[in-house]
Image 1: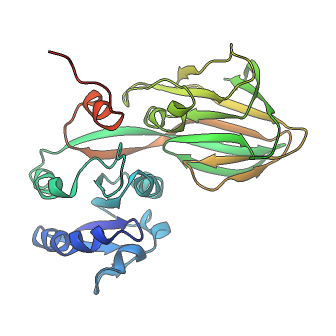
Image 2: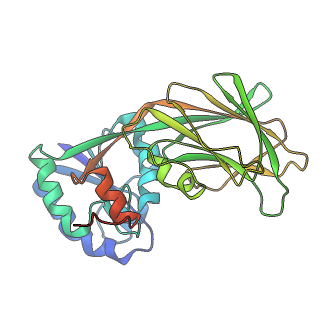
Length: 286
C-alpha cells in the first residue's frame, strides 16, 4: 500500500472543508494516510505522526495544505527521503503552493495517471561555525539571512567565495538565497529574480552603506562564507524566515548547495506566468 502524508497550516478553516473529500480520494486510490497533529484537529481517526518523524517514513506523496511557509517546513523535513510534494495554496502569495483548492482533484487525477508535472528545486546546506566548532547544520529552501537586531548599529560582514575574499560589507545584513528564494527577501532587498532551473546562488546585501555593493550571483558549486564582525555582538542568523539564532563576533556562516533536493508537483504554468500573477507584472499590450 502507498502512503500519503498531510501537513496543514494551523488555524485555517479551509482545511476542514478540504479534508473529507481528500481523504476519500486517497483511500479510493489505495493510499494509507498519515497526518501531523495540526491536520488531525479537523478529523478523527487519522494516524498522527509528528512532523519531525515524517522524514523517517516511507512516504509516496506529501500533501501540504497551507501557504509557502508550511511547504518550506515540509520540504526541509522530507528532503532526505525525496518524496514529491503537492502544495495546495490556502495562503495569499503562493509561489510554491500554486495549486488552488478548486484545482486539487484534477491535479490528484494527473498524479494518479502519471502525467503530473514535477519540478526539482535545490536546497542549501548552511553551517554555523564558532571557531572550529560547528554549532549547527541546517537545510535551507529559500534563504539564510545574517542580520542585525532592530536597535543595533550596522555590522560588518566579510564575504568569501570558495575561500577567496570578496569584500567587507557595512550593512544591515546579508542574504544567501537559492533560485527559489530569489523571489523572497532577496527580491525585497533589491536582488535579481532567478529562474528555478538556474544553477546559481545569490548573495544580496541588505541596505549596504556603500552604493557600489550590489547583489552577487555565483555558481551553485561555490561555497559562500560570511564572517560576522560586530562590536556590539547583536546579530542573528535566520533560516527560511524561522526565528533567528544569536550570533557572536567572529562567527561564520557557510552555505553551499545541498546533496538533497525537493520535487514539487506543478500545474504546468510557466515561471513568467507565475511572476505576472504573483508580482502583478503587466500583461502584454496588444
